[in-house]
Image (cartoon, rainbow, N blue to C red; front, side, top):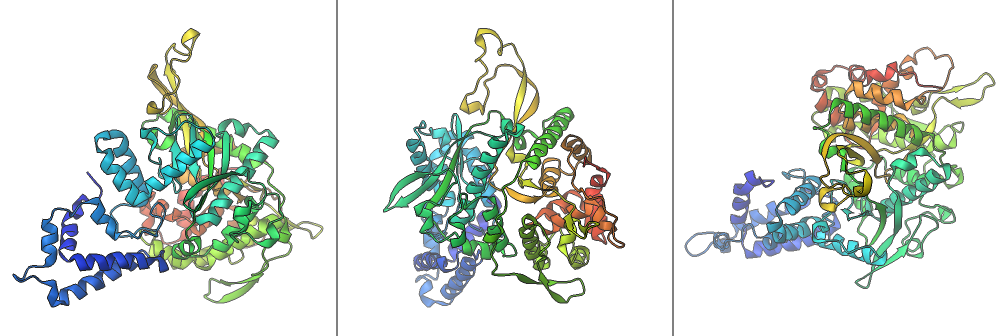
Length: 597
């Protein structure tokens, strides 16, 4: 069934309320919406006003008393794409902009649905392409893809490859031998930090000669595509230095322009700190529109993403996946991270007013004895804590209101306590947590798995008989698939540096779906400490010794609605009376983990 099929009656009723003048008013209203492109309710409010005005207008009726819109409906274009496009703002990037929460389908679901129609219903491609162009700007991104392929001497995309794939926030295209990702999420500044930190990570990965490099897609090319006088142009960029094109856009502080890697992970951390605590609408406003798009081309991984097969895998395959993820995050968290230049840290906000459990407010001066790499981490958490109550209320159901009211009682007033900070026998401040690279997005659509065949086609002269063709997503039908093995972790554009526990959140909640047996298997392969200090605990601080407490605090402060997933999987916790009850139910297995110091 097409998404929204239950709403056909509503569509017809809405059409009856409009006439040609009303349509023109709405089209003008949509164009004016660019003054506040982040408010998904604005156009709906304006439409209600327009409809009310029309209902009171005596010119709104024909001589026989019928609405003029009745004649429009009888013209049989109530579902015509060109007609529906009148309700879209031409100045809004519909690939990634906020959609009305009242929509029956979101952007990601729409992209996935159109992709499936494109492959499974080739006879409908003309109509699907029109719809994709209106809702996803598919023609715009396909033109960008074509330019990238021409510039790098890649084969032009086939008809099957015209639509972006997956449910991610950036257009990604799978070609015969490579994948092309165009960075658009969050606007130009966010996109530059995403690709810049990813390119920096690849440099570190290869310099360290880590085993992780065997399970990360190889980069073939990277650059920046932009429009100049209506013509696409491309400049190669490897993440080093500031291209003149970007330098003129004023998105990077002056004190960072001389850095070798100005858009590396530490610059990204400071950008995230500035964004933390903003509402989705505020972030959308700051993103703005752009005609500059970074891109990256990687070697295509063969096989399928885990999300497509998770319900068909055997328990043995699931355990193998858990072990694989434990091993790869072990290697990731051991990678050396770049030195932090504290002189680039913005001093615009050395203090912040933070809410305390008793309802009062207090100035928090950032402690000078916190290691530099942790200072930006704590600043970001503090900003998130500042409006955590309103953010949880905005997310709403299934997060219990009773727990939202108790959130400030649960989260520590001093967030540096989550670092297990203490003074040694010489009075020197120490942090009992290791700082590491964090992937942040190890989810079911960022894990690639390959099949194990029962076949003889891999031996002898016919060794290529089971190699790839694009229509089968990696393999020809060379034999029966007996099992699957994980091969790659994808998408390092959300990289960060911080507490290792952060990476456990998407793995446990999304990949393992809260299965503690898989988490235990993961930890047996992970073998790294999550806490390293051996000092005596201070009275009243016992909860900080529980890894489950750390994980729960990070879930609450997370920029994504992690708690929505928690209370959806553990429905009985919607009746919980305390955050401690939720913590121990969800993350209790972590407290059995000792690791290796």
